[in-house]
Amino acid sequence: MIDIIELNAKIERESAFVDMINNEIHKSIIGQQGMIERLIIGLLANGHILLEGVPGLAKTQAITSLAKSIDAKFSRIQFTPDLLPADLIGTMIYSPKDESFAVKKGPIFSNFVLADEINRAPAKVQSALLEAMQERQVTIGEKTYKLEEPFLVLATQNPIEQEGTYALPEAQLDRFMMKVVITYPTQEQEKLILRQQVGSALPKIEAVLKPESILHAREVVKQVYIDEKIESYITDIVFATRFPENNNLDKLKPYISYGASPRATINLALASRAYAFIKRRGYVIPEDVRAICLDVMRHRIGLTYEAEADNITTEDIINDIINKVDVP
Amino acid sequence: MRKFFILIFTLFIYLTSFSQSAITNLNKTKFEIGDQIVYSFSLPIEKSNEIGIYLPKEIKDSLEIIGQTIDTIERQGKKYLDIRCYFTSFVAGKHKIINPNGRVLDFEVMPFPIDTLKIEIKDIKANSKEPFTISEIMPIIIWVLVATALLIGSYFGYKLWKKYRKVKIKEIFIKPKPKLPADIIALNSLEELRLKRLIENGRTKEYYSEISEIIREYLYNRFEISAMEMTTEEILREVKRYSDINNNSYLLLEYILKNSDLVKFAKFFPDSYISDKCMKDANEFVNQTKLIVQTQEKEEEND
Figure 1 (cartoon, rainbow over the protein chains, first blue to last red):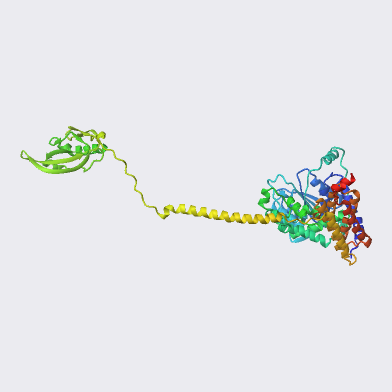
Figure 2 (figure 1 turned 180 degrees about the vertical axis):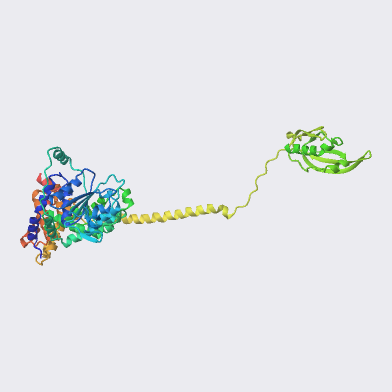
């Protein structure tokens, strides 16, 4: 039997570090609370994050700040068209002295990997990264190496300058727990950014958390209670993307070429739990599901040519669905 | 004209060699269109053996050869080949034939004189009339049939429309069932829920789910807030916009919905005091926010 009061108290205690990370990140980032929350969700739910936004919205800065606030290994890989899988995962190097091959591990052997502009690298590099993301292990030569936990890939891409890029295939996009779209800051926030950047030197971000604390927090997040009603709500939303006509959303039928996968259902549940955790709650409520629904689902729904012709986006479809599916 | 000269040229070629000895003649120098002239020439017979005689039978343009005869005659003890060509022409005007010996024979073809004044003018004969066939009148038959079908269709259509219209008119006059006010529906539902005694039977989750649904339905019927598709936070944000919901009502609603959420989603088991309070608060919220219609009589009484 779950004692919800006790669980709430535990979550309240265990989730205190969220504020610490938030404070550290906000030393260098103003606004973008949604993006920071999603990064922490990815951290807690063990899901990789894809950030999309026009250049200059502090995508890279946010990820760097998050990595710095945790005392963990961090590597940044700038994806370019001439990047090779070996540049990412490592390779065997011949040593003439020992007359043997030695393993040179690549930058993927870190706790936090920032894959900057992931869509600029060719498909084989993307595949190497996405395979590592999925399997959490890398094979160099004949030996397989486990990646260190926590292992989190935070990739960025920008929606403009598509020339010379390699768009991520849907199957690979599905491996990202969330695709977070970042928008411009408000005018007030931009004023603060201006003052911060033009003024004195930026405050240094301190490491306030150990990687073990993240692993411990993940265990606590697993205890966050999801009621059957919430499970039904999640599956109702996911099924509505596949069979919109069953939810009186016949108008969406011609716009959807394929609906969200079962991985979407799993990630929606995991992300909802993590969201409830950072909101200091020991149970998931429909608000949690709705809050992260767009980010979990937007890259998992295929649009038809009709949708593109009518300027319908996956966000429009998800909004229609969550406004139509009955909340428990 | 060109062919005529070809004929003359042919004659010239054949006869050049004996031009000194040939005798040529035309029997007429003037003749009417279609009339005949005879062109004759004679040459010593021994020359004819040297040169084959050939004359074309017909010339189309200005002079046509109708026929020719070749004969052998004797003149002054000498044999000659006598050739006669019968020509006619349908081209009026002056023409000439150049003999093989270079002599030019002129002749004129005169048009046929027509006196139009003396001609009796007759009407052009009218076209003969052919009898009608079925295929000729088939389009007319089809049109008549289509028009008849349309007329019959319109008649039955009108009949059906009249019948349908009568039904509609009847339906219009059916007195619609009066819709109960939102507060009455909600209060009745809350009373029904109380009588179900779900809490006493340990069905706490069901009890709170129903309270939550009744209140959400009331919000939709009373304020047209789509509360069924909204989360608690969204509902609480939305109701703040309505002046009919004062702070006290808002707090009641918050208490009901948040407690319901705890029970529905967090396996929270509230004590009977909270359950009773939720029911009481739900009734109070409905009563506080119900639509009050002031009738004219009451207004007059107040005055």
